[in-house]
Length: 342
Image (cartoon, rainbow, N blue to C red):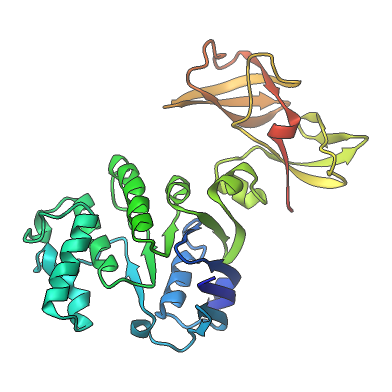
């Protein structure tokens, strides 16, 4: 592993921003730090960059201890949400700035600037004033400037956060393609689940300064480790239950218990693995409280034994019950019911 974070703590007075977080990043890997505001994502980025000093814990890059090493000697690049471009410089001058500070020769600077501008799709923009660029074009300039010195590690702090949804979705795919083409090791901070999953090889879900779960986007989504991760990913059908005689005694009735379940458990009923075609081996019966169109999905709020649950069905499903009507939800317990860590 190139980057190793081990038991890192950081406090500001009584505020504990980082509480013993540990993870690793391999060469060429894109790792996303995902979590809500205030969970410690940006603090951790600052600690890795050398802008903050951890209270305790170890940070190694390729077996080199980084503690006490100033930021400019770490060889890392950092890209912020506001891009921090120089408004009085044109595109070429912005991208060349770091190379000039590192005392590259002029010919090398020209070649490198041309190379990264072509990489980000701005080959003809070198002489353009930054103020004339769109938000997406400014984001590309900032990325080119970050990539130009060839950083060992590129860190990106909410770089797409200020863009509109359509542009953000397009740039997500382009950004991953660029990082892949450069074989760039990257650490990416975001609070947006879709953004994290689209970009990352692995995701570190953070909660109150700790790593709540680490895994591939598919693994984290398909099997959230605990109630916090499930809730953060939009899965709110979570109940406490007690396993007795092969059944889970829950607030919405008795449910089939997985073989490994015992005692008091935290149960997730996945909102996305449910059917209305009568093909499921088990059923839940309730009453539709509301339904809303979400593009490719239709979201149903269903009351089951006085408890409100949310389910997502493909919008292509016809004859969905209306609010106030009864509904029978078919499901496979092995897919739909998951035990969460407490």
